[in-house]
Image (tube, rainbow, N blue to C red; front, side, top):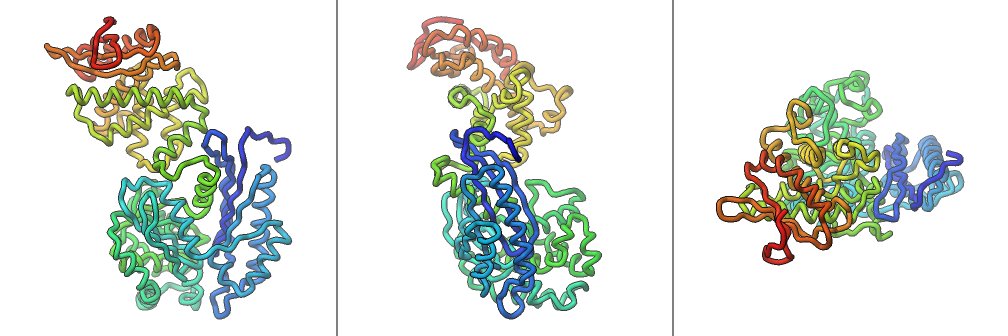
Length: 532
């Protein structure tokens, strides 16, 4: 990309060289703590092809095509002026008797030092990649990643892992050792059950350890699990897989029964399947089914994150650009806001004001919303102005679009929709089902929540209209006769803010069925100084 000028920031490349595929994640780490994905590439290499039949030797052709792919990745990273290229290799390379030869070839051709990591380190990085992209809500989860040569099993919560293991089970390995003879033909129920029994025997100690922990959730990552979930969605939901879909054991069993009954040429035509994986999908599926059965997992969430994302997270922590103590939702919201160059001081002040309004309104009996709705308001308030990155005119519409489409980590689709609609209505019109189809698509309860949260957000936004922190605090109170007061605690002259807040009286009355009176008070227990 000759002549391309990047904005200030450090560029890193992360290469994950697996047994089946090679992946490149190219990112810019920005000074404000955000990061920008410049490229996310995946290429099939089948490095482990033919390795697991007898001696563990990487085959010459497999090494050649892998080196070529990695060389292309490195050239791409250098075109972007990557400051550092971190490349790690997993199962196929770490077990190869000719590992040294392969590493020399990689060094000579791609000019990088390929770092071979242990199975436990692979499990740790996979855990970091997945756990830091989902909201576990304080729960403990099982994480399963099925690669071409190994399967990583982890138990942990959002803060730490409690158990790491790596099994010598993978889609290519199982296929090569147990399914290669007659691979183009259907797999009989007897043969498939024998494969699962082999997997159960090899994983018995790992499963015993996993079952010692109290776990509430299960997450699966890797191309194999994603593809099985894709097939399941097409088969049972009659549509492509969506982010919040789960893969149930019941559906997985049906999928595997269907795949086993087909010869390879027809397997490649199954709706949702990646044709490139058709020859190894039964081996990978057998691993997943056996593990879910023995670990007593009825369903599994599916993540597209993995080892390369763990490498990124490690780098963010080491660079001091993120804190391990931040929740995945907080990191994701800050990442989006900073990527849009938002006014972070203003966003944080509006959030503080909005939460104060929410809490005082609950104390005043104006609503009965709980902690979840409060959290949705908090994250929406942080992002309410990010649409200004595209254009200030109608920026609430741009904010709506960005929240809906930015792939915020840790949130489910219903939460993202609710946040987007709340942000949309923080200015001007109240929600209207006839005019706004996305709002109309929400259920009745969600629409009511949006209306109330939008009022708090629009008052908070007006209370910092000048972006100067003129209003120190805003809170609701009730007086005799059922009057609702909005008490404004000034930090300095806030006439502009008061004028803006006045414009929300009508909307407040429609939503909360109370007439709003605004008072300017001194900081402390509501001592009136001036009526507005």
